[in-house]
Length: 167
Image (tube, rainbow, N blue to C red; front, side):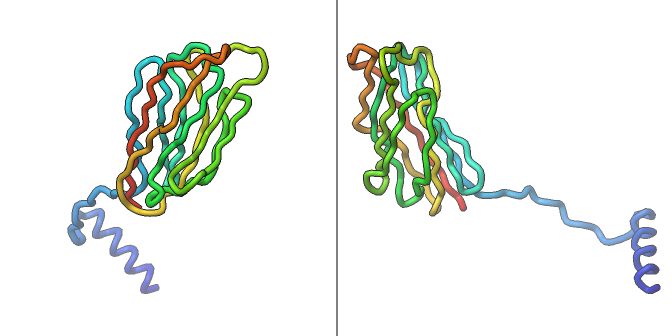
């Protein structure tokens, strides 16, 4: 009975404008992982990312390429901030990736047989990381090589980006 009386009084006080004033509600800020890519021009391999909680998913993609048959590169990442978890493929039927050392992921992707290479653009690989510490760092390419379907080297620009982590 006492609970019913209190609830009724509280509702009555609210309807009549009574009650105690409330402090303004501040916006809720949440930490997490954010990725800022370098913006590519044509003829490039680049990174773009999305995040959810402590997970960063990076897409390695091609833009404006002509007959990209295969490529290899080392993706360097801040191992003190990110832990490599897994990778998935894109438009190439053969993709291999292996963490060679802390902060160094070796990646190779290729078409198979007598087919044309990738033209225009597309996803090469998707790489997943887990944030393990707060901070900022760079993700860059090293030792990159790209070949066309004749085995000739392609001159491509390679663009990384920066990660910011606030757990």
